[in-house]
Amino acid sequence: MSGATATGYGVVTKTLHWLTVAAFVLQFVVGYAMSPEADCDPPGEDRSGGDTSDAEDERIDRIEEACEARLGDEGTLETAWSELWGGGIGVDGISLPELHILLGLAILFLGGLRVAWRMIAPLPPWTPRLTASDRRLAHVTERALLSLMFIVPLTGLALVAVSDDLVALHIAAHIAFFVALGAHLLLVLRRGLLPRMLPGAAYVRKGRA
Image (tube, rainbow, N blue to C red):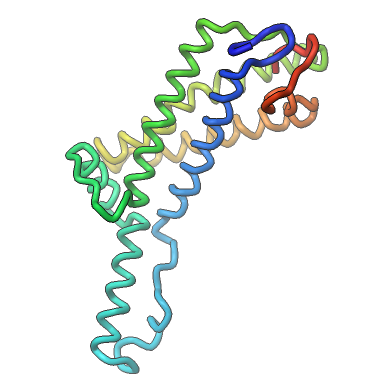
């Protein structure tokens, strides 16, 4: 039951699946929280420069600078990359850019585990609910999502370690991921296959999704 049987997916397969889902959700939340468009203006910012004291202006500036550092302004990802490799994570905890990079590495690790597990643990047979077209779509989206588990974080790591010019490639990988995910979810929900991946679910000859 750790891999897959004729009754459905096993514990290890389900665990890897939901760990992957959690890692990607957290990764995208952190990534979009680091957007330069995020608002770092503290309360009182609109009054600074004339209606506040010098001490108050300095306090507002410190809050704004700390917020921008957490959210990942220009160069912060590169700094986080250098700190991670140099063992320089601050005593105040992991910043958003550092967490973003660590999650990317975690997704790569999970991708490697899933590929290795797939090689030694067979999939259950196809469920009768899926038509021939459904099976082709399931196969394509499954392969695409598994490939993008490597492509999305690798393009992100290349962006900070090699060149900022690769940002378009990273964005393209995001778009491809969401397209493949949308097609996968549509198929799963339309055919009522989601319960097969839930913990503790047991099915008789339901097959793979």
